[in-house]
Length: 270
Image 1 (spheres, rainbow, N blue to C red):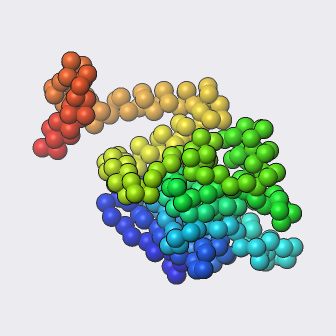
Image 2: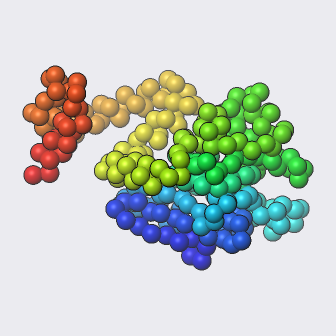
Image 3: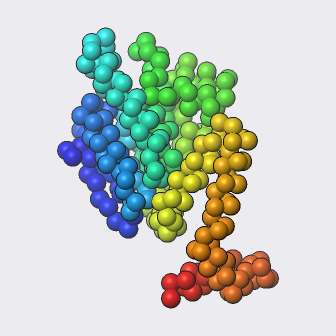
């Protein structure tokens, strides 16, 4: 990997995207991202992948304009970009984009492909492709339609205007706006919770949510199936027993639910 700096610790892979000068999605970067993402297919230890940028002003600028042409090579590169977006969305692991800069075009599509996305006061999000005579190519219009609704999606795509992180949160382009000064602490707390789950827990909720967005009845059926299967597990029964022992279903729940969870975990770790 020449354009990705990857560190792994306690179930979290942090991917620093470094493609000078401004993190353009070149075919080399796309290929490295695809290779890394696909390498996680059978990885049960990595639970979260956090994507960050080396650049102070850009998260990912956009797709390399040099591949947007009618040549076979250019078309192939554009298709690989589309595959990369699909590969991110198909990951078992929880994918998180941490955006402290500009993410336009393919950069914004990358952000929306991730499960969670957090933007600071320094970030901006947009789909300005029409200014170079093309539509979005990495599900940008599709995601805007699903997240913003018809009118707001049309306005955003036809104007190509930037959204701040606060606006992007309101429009569901990102998960949440977080002040840069608070970002490290926010992420540390979030990750400390998520890494305690099994990879199958992440997969389970991803599947239920994806199914429910497409069809509420299908999502309901899948959720019940998972519920009934998990209820039969010895692990579930051991947790319930410890939870009840330490004050579950008593008045302690009103003010100290987290304390019950902590005591339950301690009990089970003995």
